[in-house]
Image (cartoon, rainbow, N blue to C red; front, side, top):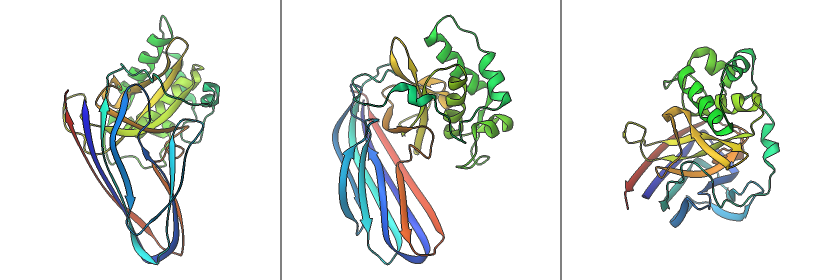
Length: 268
């Protein structure tokens, strides 16, 4: 599939700030399921700094804005050719051992309820277990916007029984770790949901490391594995670790953010 992305993020400040520095993970991953045809990241009045690929295989790029400014605009445009690999991350170069992703954070730490849910799932093999864990998250946490926040934990989302893709990913990571399956958070884009509805927003899912396949992407929010509708950006232990944009600035100001994402697709 040929996917076209426009992703614009504007950070607003109630008082001017200066010397803002941002670390961006906004360039799609390179693997057998994704081919970059064109991709551009710009920050208005920004200065592009160093870029490198980290041990997890993610592309990281530094930008700075001297200011003073009362807003910072980050614009991403591009085209990616995707191939359906039924969720398998084939041909992705990385150096971090999968064992690292057995570590938990405050967002993915399993409580008693998550542990009980993980242990209640039975399966005939690791792949079947991964699918069953993802299905358990889908059943336990309904997709409902506006009820959770960026700092909502997997345990809190399960208790609420509601959440968004970030909560689904965190919960699946927690369940996988209980069952000794390395799991990580993935940020990216989704062209359309399981119902075919246009998905004009950034998206998140989880990857589980299985003995015979390596990393496999599961999306509990859509009850599916990642296919050619998905664009993979970056990964980490949780949403904070895999955040597409991280930044700091000099000054005392309250920051708010507006985001617009448009994704078009053409079946090839």
